[in-house]
Image 1 (tube, each protein chain N blue to C red):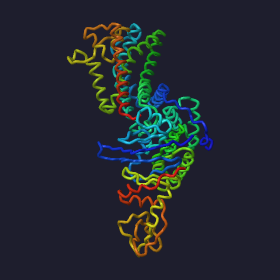
Image 2 (image 1 turned 135 degrees about the vertical axis):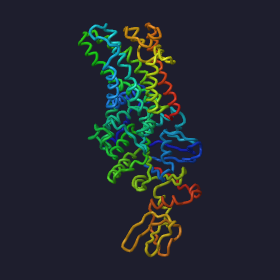
Image 3 (image 1 turned 180 degrees about the vertical axis):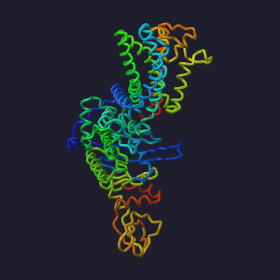
Image 4 (image 1 turned 120 degrees about the vertical axis):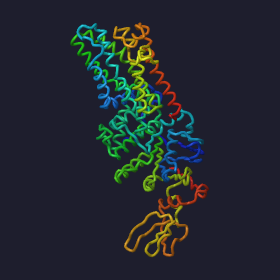
Length: 271
Length: 307
């Protein structure tokens, strides 16, 4: 004990290590979020709910592998982003709820590393059940169709599932600052159905079936020949460029949400 | 390491668009060593500490640490790197272990070198006697253990200015004593500002004291001088012979064989059989609190003693 008090060299501190602090925040946000049973129960239940009766009714043994994987991805992403957003929304004001705001603000680290750390860490943790379920599915498909399912599966995860999930994650760690978690969850539920499932056949203005939807229909259709729903109703067969546009739109929107939130919070915070 | 030169000039903080003046023109210079910050609930102690730590921006006035004023974001960050803060409302991540929480806080405080951070976390865990339970989740800790995690995070960066807000609230007597002696040891070559409304905590640890009331400095000076303020004004009045006048400030009430003894503060003898006794710091504090505000503003006490 005395040795500590008589220590001559103080710990070296570096104020500008933005990345190290962001990685640290991400690491601990991941640890805290991935341990929550609700994350696993809600996300896996929504995946399970949809995948117990997959649509379209494909045959695992005869359907072309890319189409098969894309259609499975379509089933995965139909409902699970609602769960991902729902269990992320309450992380946003968690520090205030736990009485940690003053403590964190008193450190020399600004709001940026904590916000990005939360987005990356808690977002990765919340999408972990999706990834685990996808790996299980790939194991099943590999057993039925051979090792070729693995690269196709990984590509489909990155192109079809991930952009939409990144978009939802970014919204879920930013918008609740404005709305609070409960209204956000209700809004997300409404948005997801309106923006991704209520296509032109319902006669309402909606991004469903356009490159601005978040359910990966464009990359699935363009790159994997997956089943088209709302895009087909609009008479569109997505091209590779449109698929890139769709993915880029989602990622840019996610980036914009985070950057704008960081700017607003930094402006409002003394740190 | 040397204690920082902390100068507070005409510090004012208002809330609700100026309707509430939490701090009103505070001028102060903090000496090295332990400095007690006393005051009733709502006096402005926590607001004062939040301004010092850069958590809250003042409405007007300035705080300078070693000549660096907390005016810009970059200067506040510079000063924050030499400050440790234990807030009154101490929140912790319940699902992290003490070691994980401290590691995270050390990173946020800029200790990015993994080896140095690990060594420092182990050091402070030993210092607060939590080494044996460091890998348990914080949610299983007692109130005292959580407070020790709080002080451990506050000293991670070896701060030259340590600010602790009501650290002994809710602790059992043994834990309180342990905490007091820990803070006193830490004060060696740094400034420790200890806020509390428990006078005994200050008496036992702080050579200097600042009393805030209603946003003003009511007293600043050596702890002994606070007691001196009540000298000649402290009386024992014993019932049933005499009941003390109800409007007199009463420091304590002691039941005894011959009756109940009231320790009261009065500038004149409150009863013919009242017995004059020597004043303590608590008497001085109570006397000060029952003084009239204009007098207090004009007589803020002597300056703080350099230690």
